[in-house]
Length: 245
Ligand SMILES: Cc1cc2nc3c(=O)[nH]c(=O)nc-3n(C[C@H](O)[C@H](O)[C@H](O)COP(=O)(O)O)c2cc1C
Image 1 (cartoon, rainbow, N blue to C red):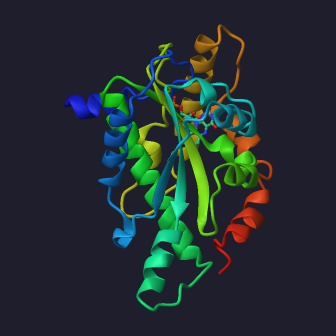
Image 2 (cartoon, helix red, strand yellow):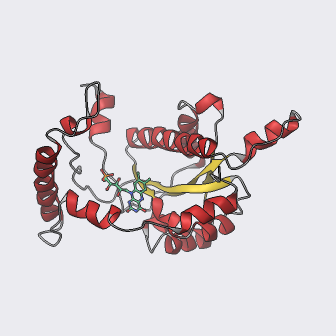
């Protein structure tokens, strides 16, 4: 183990922050760390919108389904997948932008995740806490309007950054043997490993909530993938010019 590995294994999302702000200088460094991540074909399809306007922060907290930390965190940024910059570059060279490619959508979305996670690790290394906010995709059109996102740009998620005002336990992950496979995909032992994990998660929630939450990982997956999830996303992405072919 080294410090970096220990830091990664200590990660837990933070949803309560002190009032200490994040300076612009620190934020710029964190975003630069994100930019240093690998990026498909150097496309760098990431734009980060730092939301400093208090009213906008309140609106985004509401649009994310009522998540107060969006307004309260030391800083709040929105990670956007941005094909507009490469489109403009392509056109500046006399090219015809090929709009709507599913592959470009994947490239841009993966770029965003890699950049954001680099920023997260850098922030955590400075003693900050973070919470990703996928809840912005509850109302992606309203979020896009609020941030004046043009076509070929979409909000993938938000990120709260700040100094923790809570110290939650690390949430257990699946056993490594459930996710690390050799040479071929294998479902052998999955049932048993997931069953073990289900009990670990149940205990984690019971401890964390003083017995109020009693659910396993499989029960959570039933709630998550056992129903349609944000079905508006397909139409929204098409409207923004993404993923139609
Ligand atoms: C893309 C993404 C979106 C997320 N969206 C939300 C969110 O809207 N609200 C929230 O409270 N947590 C959100 N989370 C945090 C996850 O719930 C959390 O990472 C997960 O339960 C594991 O817990 P941990 O981060 O404490 O280890 C999101 C995480 C990711 C990666």
